[in-house]
Length: 310
Ligand code: SD4
Image 1: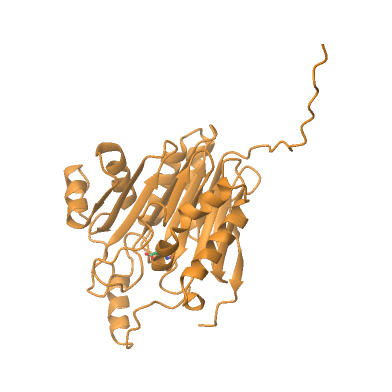
Image 2: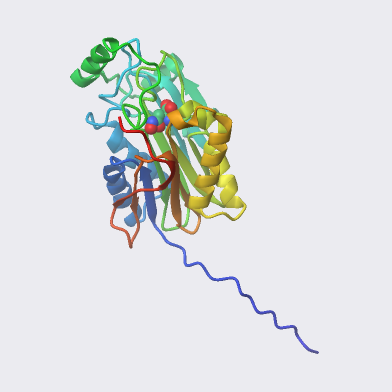
């Protein structure tokens, strides 16, 4: 009996692992911490959490954690979420006085039956878990508020200014598992209680361990309208590369937001094979990548339009 001989032409993709990718310049420091964990064989989840904790604790980063721009009432409120390779997720929004909202989001994921806890409830939960109350306002935060009040405040912060420090970080560990974390103080001088895309699973972050992960930065309202990061992952599921998936998601954001030329939205993505990519509306966005072959470098994605000079 003859046996059919089928020749496969599918190229074998050699997986790249581990990988860490994160948004903006401060991603370098977050990547360094995440890489330390990944290269020692740690989990994608631990690396994602501990990576962004570096940014949360850095008072020089003004839209994440301590030392952020406050809201228009002079209060810093933080949003964060985290996802692991099992598809579990945890999130906190509009939380005050907590230094590490990402760890609180992880506690929501691991210690409660819920996905999201907000406001005073999130703070109460943090304190019940032994987290300490921390004054997040610095001299910088106070001066920034005073300055903003004197300048005939426009509600929407200028593109790439005052609003561009959210950290979203994606990891692929040596076992091939994915995770992601996203943490921010959100839009500077926002209405008190405003929540952006960053703590919303599917908007500011999404991870599917079979496919890949994505995280977003920029004007959260626009990302929410397009369910941005879920969309990026779904495009990767359809076979698009991380860069093309990000580009298609940006096109969707553009189509849902008539004011798109006045906003910034950027996505970064990482697929199961360790391939990465990014795309944004306006020039000015960059991201940090580290793999065995790439030594924690800043990369500039393709963009739709050149940002206006500020
Ligand atoms: C928000 N997306 O709260 C966040 C802000 C941000 O880069 O990412 N800035 O809308």
